[in-house]
Image (cartoon, rainbow, N blue to C red; front, side):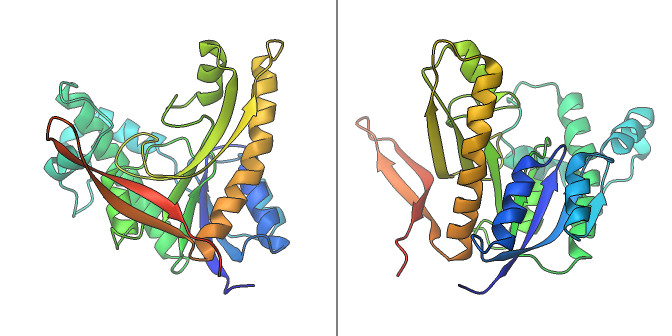
Length: 267
């Protein structure tokens, strides 16, 4: 067994993936210890799961920040180190032609909420890995850059209910079902400045039968998620997950870069 790392989790709901991670830590399938569970929603079952396992928890509600901004945008309290132009230059959540007032409201309120999140995390000591386990908020460059202090070693991962890059967004299994796919699945990936667009760490797939309902697909998907997420986290704890920048030259001479994840074989 390797040295245990400290893992923090962010949730928004029932926390079934959180439970899978907690169980894997407790039975040594993950060489890690849960340091905290944070939620953007009070009273959710995931917080109850944390309490049952004596894991410290906290809540940062986004609603009050959004309400305060709507009431008086000109006097909204922003973090001292917030730079709206910097957010615009980095983000991939909004199209270039999105209304500026909408984009500004989003990044201002998110940065204020994320500053509170960062303060809660910092108060609980350093952590090695942050896992999003059903956290229904897109993290912005403001949070990502302050948590990922070494850009070459990302430390925020998420699980998504679809085989990315297909069907990003909030309803991966629903989109899979409505499109008529014959195969569904889930993806664990690093967080970047877009929506479900970060480098892929691992994926699992399952067959979809003609008789399957949406509930069947969700059930099959969750079964795979509970296996995949602990597996990917353990690969991270063992130092097997590496990000590599790849340069490609197209036939027309254009050059582009992408970041891929490699999983090393254990020694």
